[in-house]
Image 1 (cartoon, helix red, strand yellow):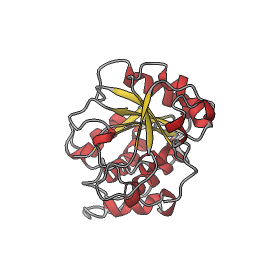
Image 2 (cartoon, rainbow, N blue to C red; image 1 turned 90 degrees about the vertical axis):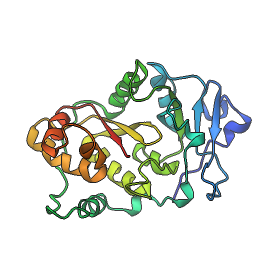
Image 3 (tube, rainbow, N blue to C red; image 1 turned 135 degrees about the vertical axis):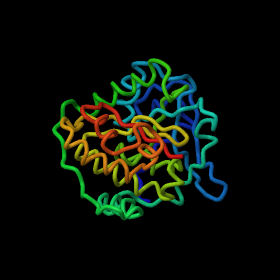
Image 4 (cartoon, rainbow, N blue to C red; image 1 turned 180 degrees about the horizontal axis):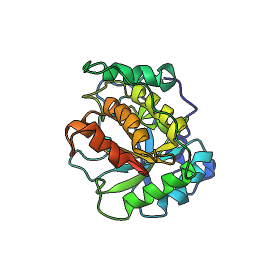
Length: 260
């Protein structure tokens, strides 16, 4: 997978990140955790202290200027933190090599009872995407949610949508082995819905949405993409239907996905 120069190795000898123009708190570098994945550079840095409202804004913007994008990671799940996950960047392709609609149509085609309806139309921005990401990040750190122990992490990635691919995240492995294909969809959602990748758990993804659908018709079109992207969201969660799921997308500021 094509990557930018990785600033993270500098943190091994400069933990505060001053050489990168940063003032980082104590943290930890994480490299590959897959047994058969020979990777020799750190994939991410995460703070030792749990994140709180304001953490994303304080560290995320300066880090982005240094080539590191922020994401919250959950260290409190039963599966542990990223040092326990199967991070396999060596088995991950490049998101730009995939077409989002082709990926979604292929997933949809696994259940051929209906023809693929095509991509949903783009929606108008109602917020700045980076401001919306900060708001969603703060909400995830303000109280009990899916993420029981969120910590801020920094990842070398070209754009927010590429974060899962950049670390070789294996959360959706039961649905798709090459997470770069899902990052290609996230890139398309960046363009059409102003999304940002805000949080990763062992098998959970949370993204902020700055251009959500504002009508039920628009949401129903988008719901088909969500079903192709993550069928478990609909098949294993009430109300267990695309129409019911679509109603929850109208005006929604964040989307969450979970793969069984």
